[in-house]
Every structure is written in C-alpha cells, then in structure tokens.
Length: 209
Image 1 (cartoon, rainbow, N blue to C red):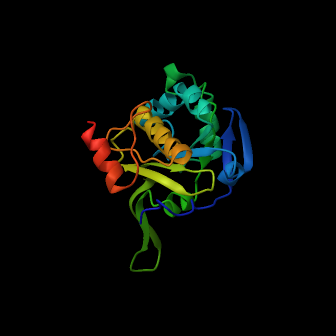
Image 2: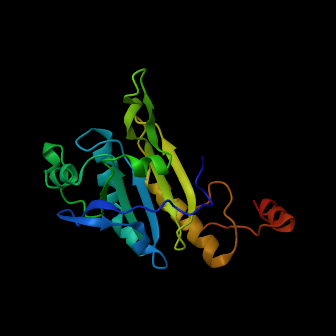
C-alpha cells in the first residue's frame, strides 16, 4: 500500500553516521519540526548499482543542505557492514567520503513497514519459516515533510538506479507548494510557473503556455 499522505513508519535502529560512528538508537523522529527528510532504501552493501546512487546523493549534499533536507539511506545489512563499506576506498568498491546516515535493517522490519521488501516470509510444510523472493529492499525513496508525513514515494526494481536530480526537483516542488500554496504542473522545475488549484488557475496557466 502507498504511504503517501500517511505518517512515515517510526523505527529505532542502529546506524552509521558521519561515515565513521555507529549509533544504537537512530530515528527519523529527530528531524520532525526541523527538516524535510529524503529516506531511501538500497538492496545491499558492496554491490554495483548501489554505490553509484549513494555517492551521487553525497555529491549533491550541498544542494540538499541548502534546502534543509536530511538524506538518510537504509539497507538490510548490519551496521558493521555499513561501517566497513564506508571505510573502504572508492577504487576498491567502497563509498568512503559518504557522510549521511546509513541505517541497518538486519531484521528487515523497516523495509517491510515501508513496503519495499522484495519478498515475504512464509512457512514450509513442516512449519519452518522460509523467505520467498529476494531478502533485500527494492530501491525505495520517500520524501517526508517536517510533520513526518510522506509526500512522495518512488520504488524501483533492483536493476534500476534513481536520479538525484529528480529527487531534488521533488523537494523543490514540495517546498514551493508549502511556501506559496500553488501546485506544480507536469515537468515543473524551480523557477518555472506554478498554478492555483482552481479551474480558473488551470485555465490561466494553460492559456499562457
């Protein structure tokens, strides 16, 4: 089920912050009332598409910080795997230099609650728990406002990397709406015209384009 319009599921988990510090009780609740949050899932540490996305988000951190947005990543790996990956040089398959938090979802409960787990638990004929599908997270991305409500979500299949520029565009659109009360039409980008959410406003916008 889509989470848009609903409160983002709450969690408390281990995470690595600043690229080198393991914390035991990380939560997105710390940002409520203070920052928008871009919370994204990726399948696994030490893989192929995942580091390209994570490094791309780090390279855009100045843009996110200008917009007062906290970027947080999450996978089903442990905090120790995150720490090792964060302290491995890029030319050896690592993501050293990434500073935003990476959450450990070893139990897969966070991925499950956000609806991005690429499989599900079942039981065999003997009642033993089995996992059907891939026990990792799809490439889910959730834009959460300062009240803790999900305003945008995107879920890609495992082979399909995401666009950091599109993520920034969605942040801009949400913040523009919050500040001005005008809605953002197709292909809207910062600096372009928006429109009022009325029949008259739509007609005026379409008439000028």
